[in-house]
Length: 276
Image (cartoon, rainbow, N blue to C red; front, side, top):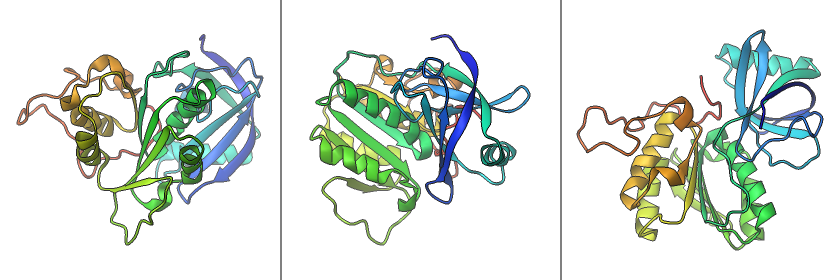
């Protein structure tokens, strides 16, 4: 699709958690057409554009949904919140991104997100289920704390409605109690380590599975390294990270190689923005 610049109306701004807010923009339906998994850019200042995943599949209703992490200490974050609160219209540039869900495919999907990376996966899930309600989807959402699952109700609804959808929530911070629920699989720890433990036991091979990753470069490549021993090949895994932060070689280096760069405990894995 050709990238277009247009003006959109701010319809709603809604706080989902103290740190994440949901924005709905309105524009001409034909002008905001996009593929599931793509992102847009919002103009903050002249020649300053900030990218965010589009958190909804194309519905033909002229609406765009964004999930935005608010970082008070970051200039761009504060400026964006101010614009959304005090201005009715914003300049938008879209669509961008090659990490998209192709139409008319039926392979099982393994969808892995950290924080507001869930926004990109939400659009992919909506499109996949609208086209083929029987497609197998395994959704993994990693957060720091339980409260950060800002769309938990929606993800659990998918799992209740579709027998072929599984929802896994990975909470990094220790929790006193994660109640047993039929529509959610709880895990504690870091996403790459949990994947190694759970998928390492459940799957003999990743052959025939399409994988989408949404998070920071460190999180994405840590997951790639975790999945590699299960037969992962580069062509079956998709992430915007591969475009703006490519790694050579793509598959992990041998243990002990100084160039190997796993996700470190202090590294942010939670932003849905495509670049800093």
